[in-house]
Length: 186
Image (cartoon, rainbow, N blue to C red):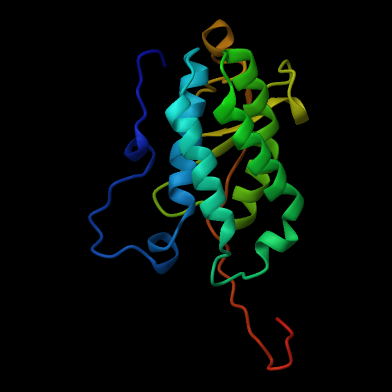
């Protein structure tokens, strides 16, 4: 996939539909996914992406600062993953070489994938979870990318297609939260 430049809009499909769904219109996850995918693409091409890494750290903070309206407790339930993602995103933004960036990306990707899987991907994104058992990263080198051939961010061009597609990342669940007036959610 050498020479491919995935700008932020390349990962979101265009549509002729007049109005996006409410979930996708309010999706603060979009800047997070765009920045994550830009960092992924750069690492897979043996490049650093300091601007995308900075954008990712900022977008993660904004994304996890306010829970989605349909699940006000998601960040509380995912507190450990949120803390790990924030810390790893900051480390990625501070990385000054490929080894440090890849280590931070590896530490970020496991809890990040868990958060994305918990809230789902918005309309227009099609993501799959990949792993590379050879990567020296948590859980065998997890990462998210669009489906297709693996684009390994841990080994870059040296082993570009080393990786296994595990599963597709789901869209947001269709859930309703009901309050019974006594502080209980159902």
